[in-house]
Image (cartoon, rainbow, N blue to C red):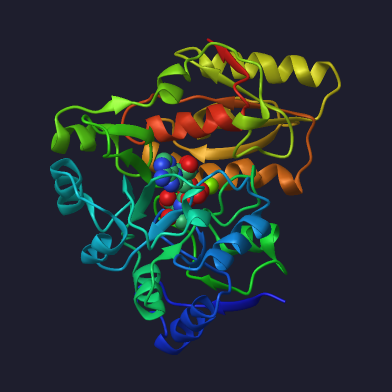
Length: 345
Ligand code: TXA
Ligand code: MG
């Protein structure tokens, strides 16, 4: 049985947070809101508690977890050294949607880092998250609170749809503001490396750092069609999805869904409001927002991908967006959700 607690986003009830923190301290699992997505928390210094996270999510144990802290000073417990680049990023973007990879100390269990010599650390901006971590009195290991491979949850309802009965509690503070996960930057390399685009944009990183390397996995995630591999299946909706990229995306989505309908398929579309208005009424539409508003699209993206859980279709077409600002994170998630089935328009 999963306990459900409704809390106010700005002024959460201290007694509820204290109860949730107690569950964490005793080795239990608590899903909680952050400004990005809901996290599945456990005591980050307790290897057994971390192991429960992997079991509840069905997550491969070599995919390391992020440790969440309540004060930037707490990073000293977890990281062997803080390079100047990392310090500059922390000063500028913490608290916020930025995760920094650093050389780890011995207090960090192997179960958290998947045996790596580095650790990923994040100081979230969300009041609920920070108060919970503070009351727990330990760093909180927290991946996104979804079943492995599914879209990340941006509401408590999405958490429960995946994990009800598998975790001890969920704190519900309503929908997350940003809607895509934190940016992950590896600061153990001479030039910091962007591992995952997210809430802090590449443009924002460059402002502080001057230069940033793109991880090869990102640099390679070009528009070339690639065979889907298990390794790449993330954020996947309930039917196979094809992503259409480029300036002609809207028109090609329109053509593809029309062909698929004619072939007798039940067809879904993950599209902008502008494109949705032009699609046949038989298409199941998951609208992610206005085409030129990447922040709104990020905030709605995972709910749009989960739309087909309740409205079954056979095939899905998604409309790509421009890769500036939050658009880079949105396109990274859409490409993974499509298993790299990509068409150029
Ligand atoms: O916004 C977020 O980051 C959310 C909320 C809950 O904070 N958490 C999240 O966690 O997205 P998760 O586990 O879904 O994603 C963590 C990412 C993974 O891509 C993982 O491979 C990477 O961070 N990561 C963790 N530790 C790492 C390390 N030591 N080196 C490189 N990558 C690491
Ligand atoms: Mg995740």
